[in-house]
Image (cartoon, rainbow, N blue to C red; front, side, top):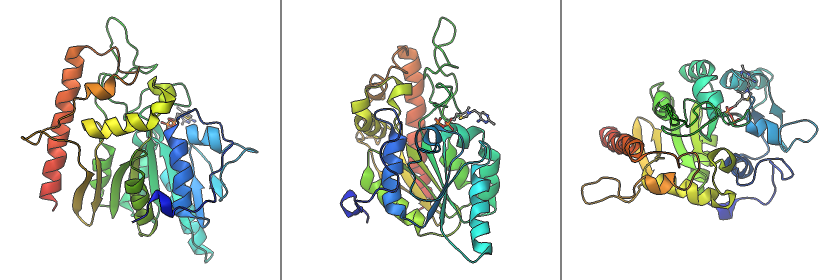
Length: 303
Ligand SMILES: Cc1ncc(C[n+]2csc(CCOP(=O)(O)OP(=O)(O)O)c2C)c(N)n1
């Protein structure tokens, strides 16, 4: 198991970048590079990570770094891997995108690469909206959340659709490894990064990355918010490998096996949810309860 104490001191994603205070994607990029090491190639589409860490001449990455277009992260990463192999070289090739570039705009390329079992590691950092262009809703934005395209007024009160279930869509592709993780649980996260690094074939990781600016949350509470997401069942930490699914971190449950901490505790930490009515909160709570039951049932069925 990899823990934060095993990480090397050297940074391959360096400081001096322009991420917002408390940005989960920056925390992730820094720590994952300590696991991946120097023989790594990164591909980023347009996203916050590109804007705050990947702009010439202020690049934070100390490994080869590529950017082409928004729609094709998985294909570009797969092309880089195949290109390297064709000239007798090899490296860990990472395609890393936000939720907009993954769940919506990059979905076709992602699905194609997964179906072909391309030998890459795909990482979606999930900050639950298109953030660098000004907080627009994505398929991964939760129900009820305010964004600039799901405003709160008399008629519309935040997003009216539920979060798209990307990890299960990826599991349905039959790829070797799919996992969710969170910046709030570093040892679980680092263990999964290490595991995915050493596997072959298509690996998909979806990592919860708090974004205080877009979520209207306190930057110093980044980790607290991320923890509360797991405790309330808003975010489930699991992995799928060799046809088995395992929930790695279980939230507190009541004696009937239902989630014990209400999602309200999570919602009220963030301005993006604070307008929600009791009815809306109940709708979301019911959805989270059902999702939890379904994930538990899948874990049981896949064991
Ligand atoms: C085809 C295309 N459509 C739209 C854009 C504009 N655009 C650039 S980045 C971005 C948002 C990216 O959102 P996400 O993938 O969630 O990453 P985040 O900014 O949240 O890190 C958009 C809409 C683009 N560059 N190319």
